[in-house]
Amino acid sequence: MKLDIIAGARPNFMKIAPIIAALEKVSDKIQYRLIHTGQHYDKKMSGNFFEQLGIPEPHVNLEVGSGTQAEQTARIMERYEALLLDRHSEHPEPKGEGAWESHNKLQKTSKDHSASVGTTFKGKSDWMLCVGDVTSTMACSIAAKKLGIGLIHVEGGIRSNDITMPEEINRMVTDSITDIFYTTSEVANENLRKLGHMESKIRYVGNTMIDTLLKNMSRFQKPVAWDKFDLKQKGYFVMTLHRPANVDEEQQLKALIDEIVTGAKGMPIVFPVHPRTAKMLKGIGIEADNLHIIEPLGYLEFNYLVKNAFAVITDSGGITEETTVMKVPCMTLRDNTERPETITIGTNELVRTNPDNIAPFMKKLHNGDWKSGGIPYLWDGKTSERIVEDLLSL
Ligand code: UD1
Image (cartoon, rainbow, N blue to C red; front, side):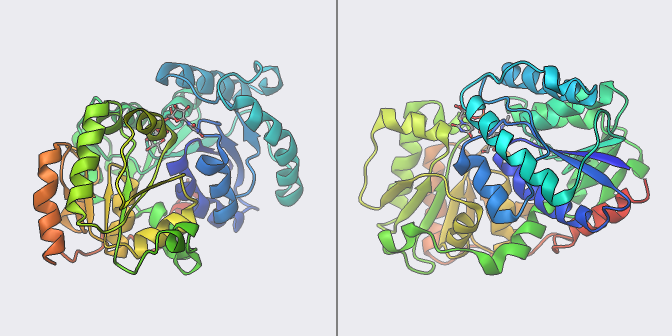
């Protein structure tokens, strides 16, 4: 079997890492090709994750760089299709911020990979496997499916029912043409059944992101921020914010951060910022003694901070899965979630985006009244093995 694996943006990398490790064990039966679209290209958003998680260098980097949703989608589709049609060498010069940088890196790295895992195939694969809900997931799905390639979606079926999120559109489009769904939750299975997908296409396997978390927990690394800000076990908050609804309007971002700083009652708040948020923060100039704004962290450093935190405040989806497994209280600053089991089973609470909602949840936290939470079925570290075993039967 010839299989393409797609990865494009930060949250994809921890989801593909364990699948690739499991595929390496059956390399006599499944030949895979790792394709990085180049949607995320900064070392801090991409390269570090490959190094820390031991992901081999991609066989191909499509080097699409930054752009609007449509620009990125179009570039990824055009370049992935060219690869599938074996016209990759003809693809246009890299476009977009950061694209040349990643192009130059690729020249060096693609050789490293072919040396370490042997030669790969050219042209069309039999199957394409994508993960999550980023632009790269949707764009590659459309390109592959139109060429008759079987489509596998890991983390299929989850829905926020919020069509203003680009990720929700990506999920809906991808799932509408998917052949095999590997799912993370019973809610996802039910969503797919309601959409009329046949039971035989839906395979509840668990969560590959949790495979990565459990595998790497003993390797988590204390970040420089620990000593720099004199952090103490369970004595600080970790915060991440990057959704347009929270960070694209100065007033909203400022109101949220003000409430959080007050609610933290002097406890340090460590805030690694996504490039999108960094651009906005420069404009509003927030300062507080207990607010520590830092660059995005590597996987091992970030999760060290999360594991030892008093609580996490986030608008990410994936982080709520990790806090659930590490049993760290988590407040989600969104009006919906595509991962309801992190609330019904785990330690997550939907605080929503209204800054006035933050204070009562902070009170609960400081009073020690937060729920302890459980772990969803099959989030056990063995999901990728189940996926690869199933792939062998396709
Ligand atoms: C993407 C995903 C989102 C995910 C997030 C995590 C989509 C639709 N969204 O959003 O689901 O939670 O990644 O990180 O795919 N930039 C850099 N360096 C990079 C990459 C981006 O500076 O390596 C800048 C871009 O120039 C742009 C901004 O960050 O200004 C946004 O990047 P983009 O890839 O468009 O989407 P994300 O917001 O990162």
